[in-house]
Image 1 (cartoon, helix red, strand yellow):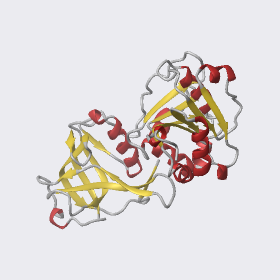
Image 2: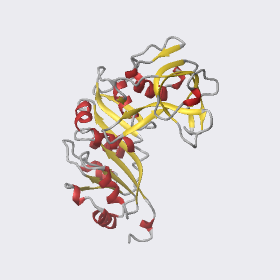
Image 3: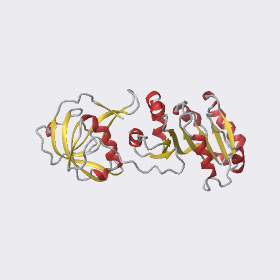
Image 4: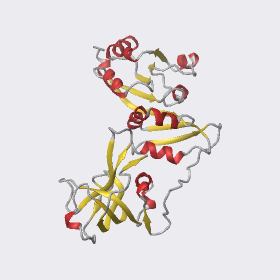
Length: 325
């Protein structure tokens, strides 16, 4: 037992990312902030030793104690509990090793008063593609948990829109921030070069462009408000859905073959013209012509794109049925 004081939850600020992603630097900058540097006792678990070292003077000034953890098996419930009893912190920072699994973190925290308060992921633009191509499952698990993703060491050539879509594909609500490698340079919002024309009232999507449109409509729904989409999609219907609605969408692989999910927006069919409208079945492929309206929907618990079908016709599957990001 940690005693009466420690029966209460202890907030955890979780910093994740692969080696040389800038976690240590960002943690030290956080400790310097007035809202964080308030004299409370901070216990910092450093689970990865990178090039950057913690400033001893800063740690002393911010009442922060660092405990280094070299091996994954050492980061367990008994270890965490013993350190909480030893230091009695008011809050905990965990600089988590990017090569350790999220499941291990969750298991280690079970039975302790530690409760994740905020999760921040740091990524290095110079190695982003390398890790996404070779360690995608680990990266995706981090992105899924994050409230904020900071991609540092960016240049004007960094494909920010592509990186943002890759992250948003697995976590729609995460905030993605880009930090320039040039001190003081402003990474203003990048104009997203879409592979389809949105200038007209009717937008025709190629089969390969559905994933790009889905993410862009989620981030910038106002661009599509009142537009008519023409696209090939698959039908998803569920018993709990209101009569006259379905979800047209595609199956997307966000991580690996074991992590495939259906992505789409709600669609109303009340006024649709179709020879097959009465025989719409789950998993059938259709060419959908639908108007986009941005409105509140219970399924989203927020405002978002809602489709109103104008025409639905049976179609052949695309050459590649899966959507990739």
